[in-house]
Figure 1 (cartoon, helix red, strand yellow):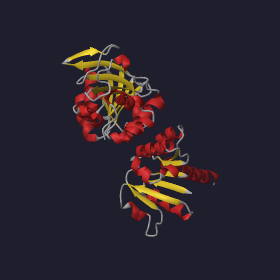
Figure 2 (tube, chains in turn purple, red; figure 1 turned 90 degrees about the vertical axis):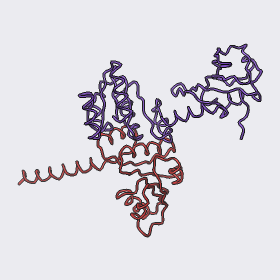
Figure 3 (cartoon, helix red, strand yellow; figure 1 turned 60 degrees about the vertical axis):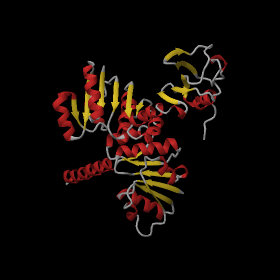
Figure 4 (cartoon, chains in turn blue, purple; figure 1 turned 180 degrees about the horizontal axis):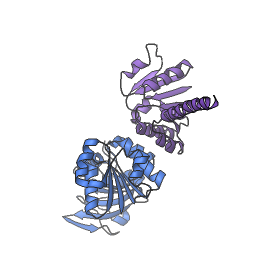
Length: 223
Length: 140
């Protein structure tokens, strides 16, 4: 497929390199002269020089074809938002993925309809929370377009769900238990599966029902 | 009437002072403290130090209850993002945003932003000036 990568820093350059190795057609856009010179040595005509938030530069990169995928991977969130909006709304690019540098800007991306985003800080925080199970529900994966989250919960002896069968839990609408990890083994969560203290439960939940799921499985949050 | 001016450089500070002189209750926002100096010693309006992308800064500037907003930082992309946030998140209809790049100004104007493009204005005025000279020359 054809992919435009906007921004040739560490993230963009590595994305372009990997996509090329996978056999895709790529155009990489970089504005800074020094970075461009370095990239040109490696990528040759694949990289073009210019400001990817300028419509004429995006057109030079082939935005009007349009590409199957546009990756807005610069180090500037405003630039990534504008690149995404021009690609999506101006040229009907079917798939746009934007890098979020500052997690506080995530809500701006959501507001402006750039639904597929990736934020390194938030991802690392998610991994940190994964290492601290007493935190409650751990969000493993956010499916933004579907409005769903894959979460993990550790059942404690004090949890209201301990000793209950899956079928007997009043789970919130739009949620389902996927699997139970205990004694080093994972089994699918069947209606007859009984939850026990120490179990690590995987669940899929609508993002607005996560708090209710937490209450059903683990009880009210400790303050 | 209440207004907020995001980006208090040469343009933003003059707009803020002009609105205040007309009797508007104006709050200026800039990430640089020196910007306050551009508003002059007699400035009676508000001033919030911070970046317009920051929701807490917009909140402190009272954006939710303004009648008009002017977005005029030195970055086109920053401006169109802040303007859209003010329009869509806070439901403010009268948001006027400075965009230097004519192509981007047109792109966002077609999507409901009130864009003001000084570059396009300069192009039009310069063209008209030269054309009127040619007209005089050919008429003579």
